[in-house]
Structures are given as C-alpha cells and as structure tokens.
Amino acid sequence: MEEKKLDINSIIGFILIFGILLFMMWQNAPSEEELKAQEAEKQAQIDAQKKAEAEKEDTKIVTETDFTEAKDSAQVATLQSKIGAFAYSVATATSSEKEINVQNEVLDLKFNTKGGHLSEVRLKQFVDFDSVPIYIVKDGNSVFNLQFQTTDNRTLNTKDLYFQPTVTKSGANTIVSMKLKTAQNKFLEYNYVIKPNEYMVDFTIKSQGIETDINTSNPITLDWSQKLYRHDQSISYENRYTRLTYQNDGDVDKLSQMSDDDETVDELEWLSYRQHFFSTILVADQPFNNVALRSKNLVEDEEVDSIYTKQFSTKLDLPLSGANLNSNLKLYYGPTDSQILKQYEGNIVESIPFGWGIFGWINKFLFIPLFSGLSSFLPYGIAIIVMTVLIKLAMSFVQYKQYLSQMKMKILKPELDAIREKYKDNKLKAQQETMALQSKAGASPLAGCLPALIQMPVFYALFMFFPTAFALRQKKFLWADDLSSYDVIAELPFNIPLYGDHVSLFPILAAIAIFFYMKLTTGQNQMSAPQQEGMPDMTKMMKYMIYFAPIMMLIFFNQYASGLSLYYFISNLISIGILLVIKNFILDEDKIHANIQVKKAQPKKESKFQRKMKEMMEQAEKQKQMQEQQKKKRK
Image (cartoon, rainbow, N blue to C red; front, top):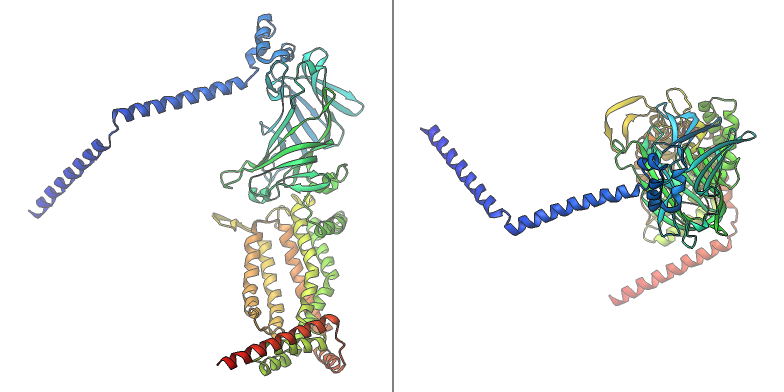
C-alpha cells in the first residue's frame, strides 16, 4: 500500500508540473504583433546577408568570365563599363591568372598577374622547427594593393586587376616587369630586380601617361598587410619577438610587443614586418609621409591559434613626380640576422632588438663579434660556454669588491650592534654613529651595491643577445635540438599555466646553480648586514629570495631559448667557483680586520657632502629634542 501511495503521489506530482509548464508556455507565447516583428527581423537578416554577398561579388571587378569573353567587342564594352580604361589590360591579357616563377640562390619567388605582386616567397636555405620549408608569403597571407580614383570617378584596386608580365635578363640580374595598361604606351608598372645571392629585391612603382586615366588630384594609396607565419617550436615565444619596427627620422621605434596597436608616423624611412628569425622589410629611397601602421595579435590560445603570430598593415599615400608615380623601393625577404642585415644600407640592422642604449652597444660591439669569432671554430654550445667563462673572468673583480665589502661589514657587525644598543632610544644618533664608524673603517653597504650595478648592463645585454642570435637557430648541443628554442627531456600529458607542456633540463640546472650561489652569498650577507632602523628586514627578504629566484628561473625559462639557460647555468657555476677562491685563497679576514683598525685610528677628513649630512642630522636631532621638551611642558 505504501508503494502504491508513493506511485500515485508521484504521478499526481508529474501531472501538476506538466500543467504548470503548459500554463507558463501559454503565458509566454508571443503575441501576433511579436510574431510579425520576429518575421520582419528574420527577413531583414536575410536581406542583409544577400546584400553582403552582392557587395562581395561586386568587389570582384574582373571575373574569369570577363577574361574568357574579353576578346569579343561587345564584352570589351561591358568590361569598360566596369573598370573604364583599365579594361585594356584585361582585353590584351593572355590568361585569367598566371604565376611567374623566378629564383636565385636564396629566394624562390612567384609573382601573380592578378595584383602584380608577390604571391609566394620561399627561403630556399631554411626550414622551420618541423622541417617544413620557410614561406614568408603564401596562400594569400600578404596583400599589396594600390587604390586610386579614375578620371571617370571609379575607385579601383590593383589587387583586383590584371597585369601583363615580362621577364628579362640584365647581366646576372633577373628583371620582372608587371604592367597594368590602359593603352599600348600608358601603364602603371611594378618593376622587380632580383640579384644573385641577394635577399634584397629592388622594387620600383612607376607610371607612364596614365594621368588622363587616374585622377591624380586624389591620393594614390598603398595598402600593404601581411599575416606572419609561425616558424618556431613555441608560438608564444616566437610572438614575443615578432614586432612591427620602423625608422622615423633616424630613430627606430616599434609598435606594441603583445597587444594590438596602431600608430601614425609623420616620416618613415623603412619598416620591418619582423618575425623572430625572419623579416619582410620595405625600404624607401625618399621617406614616406603620414604613414598609418597597425599591429594585431593573432594568438589568443596557443593550442588553437597555431598558424599565424601577428598581422601587420601599412597605409600611406604614394608621392607623385609631376603627374606620374616614380617610387624607388627595396624589399627584403630573409633572415633577421645581423651579419646579413648590416651589409645593406639604411640602418635596417637596427630592426633587430639588440637592447636599448648601452645594452645595444654592448651587444653590437662586444657580444656579437665575440660570439661570431668563437663560433667560427668551436661548436655553438662550446662557444657559449667559452664566452661565459671569458665574461665571468672579466667581471670577477666585481665579485671580489662585493665579497670584500661583505667581509668588512661582517667584521664591524659587533661594533654596529653595540652602537644600536647604546642609542636604542635615539635612532638619529645611532645612524650618525653608524655612518661615522663605517666611514672611518672604509666599509659601507653601498660599496657592495655599486659593483653589482656594474653587472646589470652586461646581464640585460646577454638577456637580449641569446633570444635574437640567429646563429643559434637549429644548432644542437647535448640533449638540446635547438639552442634558440627550449630543450625537452620530458613531454607532459597536460599544460601547466606559465610553465608549459614539457620539462626543460637546462632551466632546472640553472635554477639549482642559482640556489647554491645565493645560499653562499646570502649566508655572508645575513652575518654582515644588520637591519637598519626604519628599513625592512633584509635578512627575511633574502631568505625568501633564495627559494623565489630559482623557482622563477625554473618557470620563466622553461619556454625560453636553451642557449640562454645554458649561459645562466655555466655563469652561476663559475660564480660559485670564483666566490670560493676569493673566500679561501685571496681574502684573509685577520688582515682585513687589522687594516680596518688602522683606518679607524687615522684621522678621517670629512668631505663637504659628509659635513652637510652631519649638519642636517644634527639639526634634525635638535628639532626632535625641542619637540619632546614642548610635549613635556604641555603635560
């Protein structure tokens, strides 16, 4: 009976729920007016879609049918109604679309008669991380277009029009001419000169006699955009070094590194669609004016967005010479390699991010020549090690000064503690006495900081050098397949945020070396550097840093160039060795202590700065005493 009751109750419950749902559906049912509005909205969407498709079809100014039927006079007349005088270029063309293939020792180029520009650029001597040939331009990733107004008020785009090709030889050079004709001797021409063993192509945009067809009172606009293909193992790492770079009035500038960005430049001498290791560079003989530049990041999810890194675009008005175009340009398609780029004029080698100011100078005039010399006769991994040894030996005096300062502070620590205890109720007096003792003994906390600052330019310069060193690309060393990318000793079945989906060994070794180096130096610092009044507890901070710095190295460098991690690993090993040598064989604590006592006994001549500081502190002390006396009187 109980079960029957439950069953009946359940059935009744379901009926009630069903009834409530029917009632709600009836209540929420759209009215006749609402149904009509929905139908109207739906029809509007269909009409908008049809209009968009029609507009898209209209942009195809010249179709395949136009080509096949253009020989007929009636069809030529129809074509003229579409594109005016430029129908001549279609009527005299031999085929609807044709690719012209030209090669030299380093470039494999294809020019398309539709649009007249490069439809494919392959770098013959390079492959990507997956052994696929390197293509800078392919499958419509690049659009090079001139937009202009005709004298009969049409707006035309060269990307939709068909050029007549001619390929000739001039000595060892190959010349490709693409002409967009309005008559036999009236044309707009793209002229390309391909030289042997050259990544740089001479490129001229010129016109002849078309001032009667093109309205030159309106600007002729160059619109050039390019999606940059991914070539590195890590697309996010490659994207970090993919950046639109340009030279404006002699100064090199860049659009944003990771986010979308746009900029209008008054004067532009060259611009580089720079990828990590490959670049497309446009160089002008005369600077362009009022140039609009744009960069769009195409990588939101590395797992999904795996083909392109960024999209760069440029828009500018081409200058006229009289009533015609005559712009002499150069196009570079090749490696982002300082050894190659510095061969060309125009300062385009500065498109490589060597680092700002002094950091760039150190790279250009020291590290790049040094590494080039070493790698000319040593394997690249060994060259990095030898370079690291030379740099550390050259900077060993800095470590010596740091450790000497730490040892002096360690020796003075008992006296400094006694001063703080004696004047524990007078912080200002304690600071005065502390400074006086340090000055007499020739020991100061700043003496250990200043040598460390000398290392910063070297540290940052090397941080910029390794990720941009083209020579390291696809060079193997030990278990690393590519010193310009991360090494892999284990693949993870999942992705860890910030860390990645793999385990790199060089960052682990570097992190271990940093841990032991900091353990050695921090132990000395804790003994020698007492906490200053009013300052944070540096001892606690350094304890945290011993563990924090290696963890950051482990995470941050897991997807960085293995050559950089190799440098830091070797560098910290050498630093540990130098520190042990200085501590055990060079510096003698007893001699340093005796020397400090001699200095303390000698009269110390105060500098103007020291006297001024002393006077200021004494005045501050007097003010404090007066304030305390006034408080007592009020009480």
